[in-house]
Amino acid sequence: MSADSIVMLRRNFKHTVRNPVTVFNAVLFPIVLMLMFVYVIGGAFNVGVTYIEYATPGMIILAICYGLSGTALAVNSDMTKGIINRFKVMDISRSAVLSAQVAVTVLRSLVAIAAILGVAFAIGFRSPASFPEWLGAIGIIVGVSFATSWITVALGLAAKTAESAALAIVPLILLPFLSSAIVPARTMAPGVRQFAEYQPFTPIIETLRGLLTGAPSASKAITAIAWCAGIALVGYLWSLNTFNKRA
Amino acid sequence: MDKVLVSVLMSVACQAGGGPGPESGPMSTSAIAASGLRKAYQDKVVLDGIDLDVETGTIFSLLGPNGAGKTTTVNVLTTLIRADGGTARVAGHDVATQTKAVRAAIGVTGQFAAVDELLTGQENLQLMADLNRLGPGEARRVAADLLERFDLTESARKLASTYSGGMRRKLDLAMTLVGRPEIIFLDEPTTGLDPRSRRTMWDIIRQLAADGVTIFLTTQYLDEADRLADRIAVLDQGHLVAQGTPAELKRQIPGSHVRLRFASDLGLDAALRLLPGSARDDQDDLILRVPGDGGVKSVRALLNQLDAQSIEVDEFSVHTPDLDDVFLALTGRASTKESAQ
Image (cartoon, rainbow over all chains, first blue to last red; front, side):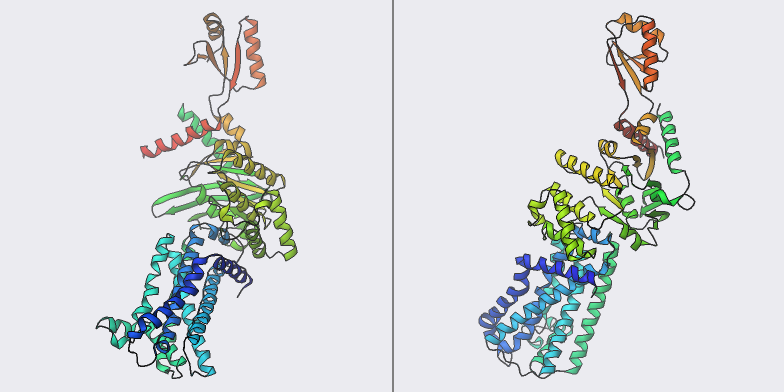
């Protein structure tokens, strides 16, 4: 990362810490959601294993997606409040503004996921995963967070107002619910089931689940990585394009 | 009357803009030199061939109403957008091909305060210092100096979101100054400020110019351009309709006249016969308008003439048109021209 990116990252980090809504959405809300699913709703589900064991990988992905709303709003407010023009006329790396947003989002996700895992272990989650499998899991988590962050940066850049920025990332937050995050796809109604089976989050969550339960599947992992790479690339190119267009 | 006015002003514009172009002219004294700048959005022409020449160390003001193309001009000169045609050099560097060098030389304070609201005043300046690669010691010193100079020391540790409009503008300008730019672009720096903050901003701008910084200022306020600028260019619908010093612009407007008030019709009639071209004022029967530039020589000659005929004058004043007259005359011309097309 360039020196400019690190300066920008420090700036974004201060923003996160000073914005309680971002911290709540990114860190606390996923924990609340997990406790709700494990203790209130999940008891009625029959997923073959204990629900906490099934749900933890899904909750990790949900935590990543909930963390994105803060990023979309931050990017949008930079664009609409004029400070972006200050950065653009300075002799600094233009992409630093964007890559710092991605970096802070990934770091925030890692904090949120550490918290989620901490709570998960505290309420009965156990993983037989080996050290390399844990590394793989962390890799997938960083990959998903990286890819969705770039898409979110693009959405935040493209949105005209804070409201539309918040609205634009709702699909990203909803997608994990329509995957195998909460319940297996095969239990869903026809139509939804096909959607759930083929949308990117299902192979991603299945890969993560496989790694955490010590039974990783190579084919799912390849699909998941391909999705992450594709989403990241589209988000990156879209972000740069929008950033250069909006003077 | 309008035609005369237009031709005179166009000749002023030509004198100012038609000089040596940026390629052939002496570059050393020009901080900003642009020729033939064009920019259109779809079929709407925003800049239609702008020629500018701003001497180093001077205050140059681009004056025009909303939508004239002022911000677009600033955006082109500050590398924010690319012109469709024409060339511009800022600090000797081409704005299209040497963007890095241009950006390193300039500072820009836009129409909307570009401060980070979630950072304190101090942190905003620190951010600029970090991006300008100042060492920690120097950064602290520069930030403290600027806070002091802009009277923001007390609020330095408060979030910028709590600042008033005037404070934000000051912080904005302070942030621009952290990088010690040689040329500063100020896009409507006082729009929306209360009179007191405007005055403070004016003082700051004058002080910067005194320190040798070149200032490119856009404004829609005539008095602002009049008070601050060494040279003014009047922009209307993407055209420069006049360029010159404030005094030059005002002098070029026909309509300078001396107003004489008489005690009675008798004196007025005598003067009317004596002075060619003089006319009664439309509003006041006892006032005579005598065309003239209001210079000391012509006024003395006029008064001597009246004295010689023993014509008693009660009151005497010189009316020079202010920039308002210039501006309205010019923009009026432009709008009639458009409707004629």
